[in-house]
Amino acid sequence: MNFLGGIECLDNIEISINEDYVFLKLILVTLNHPNLNEAIFSKEEVIKAKETIIDAPLIIIPDLLDAPTEHSKSFPKLDKEALIVGHHIASRIIQKDGKDHLEVTAKLYKSRYPELVASLYQLHLSGQLFCSMECSYDSEEQTTNGRILKGIKFIGNALVSNPAGQYSTSLSWEAAKKETKKLDWLQVASIEETNWLEGIENLN
Image 1 (cartoon, helix red, strand yellow):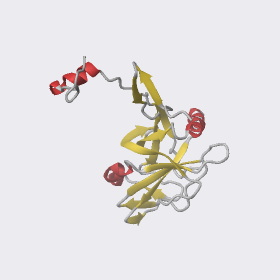
Image 2 (cartoon, one colour):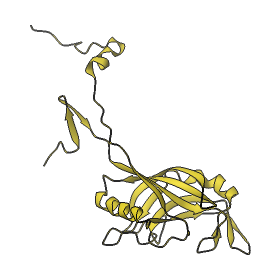
Image 3 (cartoon, one colour):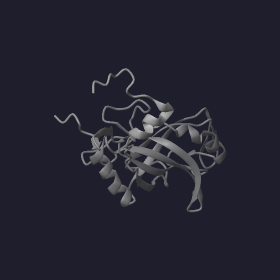
Image 4 (cartoon, helix red, strand yellow):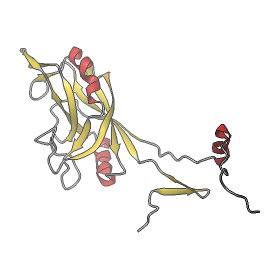
């Protein structure tokens, strides 16, 4: 067993290497546009709710080829097959194709699921990486076009094969750069004039 796995040695100083991530941008929901279950997310409600996706999980129930399947049926509780492959770190409203959308950025755990993330990358490149959000809400208003949800709270997002939102697809994929930190002992020792030899007797 290699007890130094994940440890890089620089000038005889051992430091850990940051975990490898991918930053994935997705359209979480399209504003004022009914999805397949006729739910409508108004701009007013989404503006109030858009920060609730921060830190919420990104999940997937993969098939045998690591492709997305569907939601966890008991969401926000997770089925045994469900994996939390990331979490959301940012959200903003954008315009694309003449419509307003809520764009989210998710941090994918590449180091934990390298093969799965590689499969998701291929789906992204082919324009076939879709998502479907989960939310709670306080009430709904019936209209001729669908149900306007009120008091929305986004509680998660799933990578799926058949999204409820027509435009809920991936937008960009950016690999996070690994960072290493090399310690400068001369600089460290100069802080507050610390005496690193205090309590040590010099026998020479």
